[in-house]
Length: 354
Image (cartoon, rainbow, N blue to C red; front, top):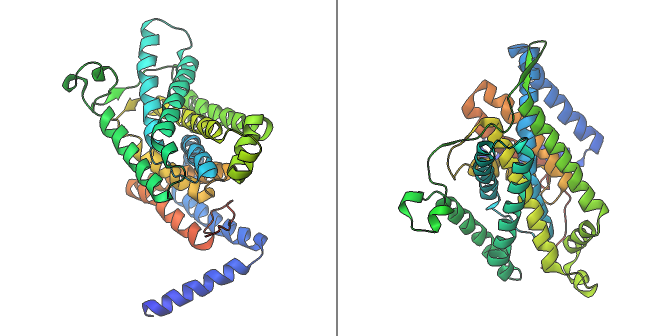
């Protein structure tokens, strides 16, 4: 079979799939998923399956907090903020330095203070970046904003990677350096075993904090005046201007909320793994969270959550088989999903005037 026949056959099968009723599509996906999960259980056992499932939910929680920032910003101004992963990194470093200071001062329960302060400082940085780098390009072609976002990302990575010994005051007080840093033990690590399946209190904390923050975000978006304004700006900016809504203020608030969630993810990520590799550590988590947001339907908050947990669980299972496979599974899933559902799992097609 030559390439043309293979392409025609694939396109024909995709068109047949797209014409199926939704329940039939979900049935096919469920059968395929159960088939692969059954293979895993038969190969590695039920205990290994449950252990990796717990690990995947924890990793998916990290991705979910990052992906929510991507999808919120895209939903309101149609911008892919590629610097978002670096703000995740910034939040982790702020938590590291503040955590070490509080522990040295014998501060009780430092985790809550570290988490909140990191979210606030990172939110301020995110809002500053939006005002300085993105606001002047709001009514310019999207490509200009996209290239600027890549530039901001590269600047943050390379600026914070400067060694404090090699730069003058006061820059030496705000750069992190390229060295590995141990993350402080903000809470005592305790491991619990249930029928051969182990889970520690840090993983439980990660999942719990993520769920609470997602519930809080949903409340803000659905029940508050700020959330209603955010949804209105995402729907029609021109109408919002006529209604007296301050679009600039709402966009800044959106950036602040999104980047604060990235900072929370950075804190939880560093607490779980216990080490900060370098100021480049946000690249891979940021990229995978972006893929998760696209997978769920970029601009759709529930879609970002679903895509993130699917991504985290899939990556964990794949990594348990082969570490290299774990790195590539995100892209495989993305390609397959976008072939059959280009708008993402929960995304919807939108028409644009040209």
